[in-house]
Amino acid sequence: MTSLLARTPDGLHLDPDVALLEALTFPTFPVKKDSFRRRYSELDPLLLAAAVASGPNVTRNHYAHDFHPGVALPKAEGAWDRSKWDGERVNHTKKFVYTSRQAPRSVRAPEGKENEGLDSDLTRPLESALVNIPTGKRGQTLTHTSAIPSPLVTQQSSNTPTKVTCMARTRVPTPHGTVFLHLYHNNRDSKEHLAIVVDPAQLSHDVSSISAPPIRSSSLDAVWSDSETESERLTRGAYVGRLSPTSHIASSPGSLGNLRTVDAIPPPLVRIHSECFTGETIGSMRCDCGEQLDEAIRLMSQPISIPSTRHSESPTHIPGRGVVIYMRQEGRGIGLLSKIRAYNLQDLGHDTVTANLMLGHGADERGYEVAIAILQDLDLGSSTGEGVRLLTNNPDKVRAMEKEGLKIAERVPMIPRSWKKKDEGEGIAIDTGERKVGATMVGGDAVHGEDLEKYLRTKVLRMGHMLQLNP
Ligand SMILES: Nc1nc2c(ncn2[C@@H]2O[C@H](COP(=O)(O)OP(=O)(O)OP(=O)(O)O)[C@@H](O)[C@H]2O)c(=O)[nH]1
Image 1 (spheres, helix red, strand yellow):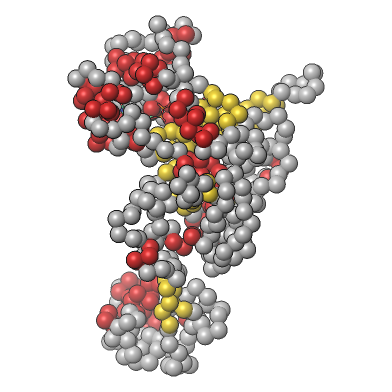
Image 2: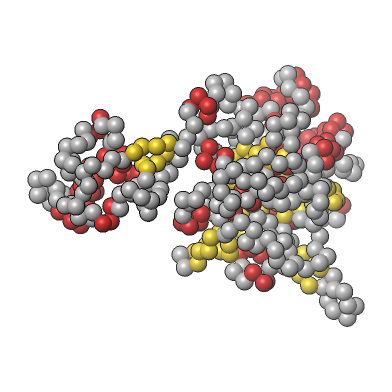
């Protein structure tokens, strides 16, 4: 690159950035002089330079395009190896052939069908990694490369299988300990649903120390294409252990799958949680959503006690494990705008159910097929597996999940903290509106207030939530 920089057209000493740009777009670079008409050429040198510098996945629009065969397959016949170019031995007859692996836009995004099936160019490169299989089974048929694991699909009543792909995963420290945040795309809607995986045992590099089946995403651990580099895999979170400047081991399909694990570990706790901006972000005391999210992560992070088989020995403890599937279904699926209006109707004296109905919505408009597909991707809740312990009070949720094929080993209730504290005889401020800093949000404490009490009672009395009403 130094020699390229030295070849600036007028010999001036340029700022490194400008010099680099000039070098990369210099007319003699690296083919016959003036063979490119700069920005108006079919093959724009600046674009080519960006592609060379950044790899094939330059931007959303360039994703899956390629300058064949120079970029993605540097060792392919006819590939242009820039590192060996000396400026003299350039084969001027060699042409860069531009190829695209994307389908035409008309195929990728049929007009007006945005929410009927996300088939955008964002997920297009992964389509080849997805194979349709019936609920709960993991197929072996591969469409692209044998290195790609089976897809995660759940069968819909509409016969259209729901497909999900974990696009990225990262470690997030929380007041309850480390979690792994997984971001998913799916073919049902254009929302970015999340899985918050509590499984701190995976931070260990010593695989033998892992005693429970690790909660891993199959679509994340899959190799997405033959040309995917280790650095790309690490960047999207497909690694094992803990990522650091000195430690980076890319995962491979099933790399942690066949561990011998301790028997008698209870099935993982799972919560299907719906987004609530008001409760989770600004600490609204109209609902218990923030508190429930916090409580779910807290419960999952508690060490698990495994009773000893011998009477004389004390129980062993292993790190907690579980998953919150965080669905972007604000306001029980009616959206934030309608929920805000519903709050005003509630202030006018209606309860949360009636307010929804008055706005022309159902009491609850959520669906759970994407959540189930995400659980399948994490290898949880299949009919042949151990099942999950589902954290909920909502009988509709339990029914809907079972209908979608989730195996529920146990329902674990979520008792509002203020009710629990009362039961336990702990004093809390009642009806004063006072609360501790951060209450209702992750890491917060119990909260109590008139609005919340009304909301909780409506859940029990009108939505049938399985909770003992507080007198
Ligand atoms: N429409 C409407 N939605 C609300 C209101 N209060 C909270 N929500 C939404 O209700 C949803 C909370 O649902 P979940 O946390 O899944 O809980 P749930 O269905 O009540 O059942 P559990 O699993 O027992 O907690 C979130 O999407 C909130 O935004 C309200 O007054 N009106």
